[in-house]
Amino acid sequence: MRDIFIVLACFSTIPLTLLRPHIGILAWCWISYMNPHRLSWGFAYDARLALVVAAATLFAWMISKETKRIQINAVTGLLLAYLFWMSFANLFALVPDLAFDKWEEIVKILVMTFIAMILINNRERLHAFIWVIIASDRKSVV
Figure (cartoon, rainbow, N blue to C red):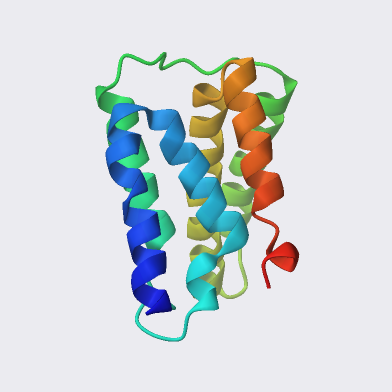
């Protein structure tokens, strides 16, 4: 029963995401920080719910009239330099298969981070983003 509730809660954000892509970022952050699917014991435990929400968010962002530019500042420069350094270091990994798996995971996270930096562009969205992070604390849930 818990599995169905968690999956329905995650998938219920997709229609809202298609209307407003920043809702998808909030849902992705909630799923990524809280990991609600890990609170179940059935089919939802290994479900890739964050990937589904991220794909819906990327699709919604592409078709929306939201701005598609990222602000270039020190933070974005450092994140891009970090991404470049990890990609370069991955070429010389001692165990390439494991290194590529971790690199792929980090690249997915950083892509969504850059999308969040684009979509969270005003005070109300920033406050909602912060509240989602606060509410996603698993210690207060369990």
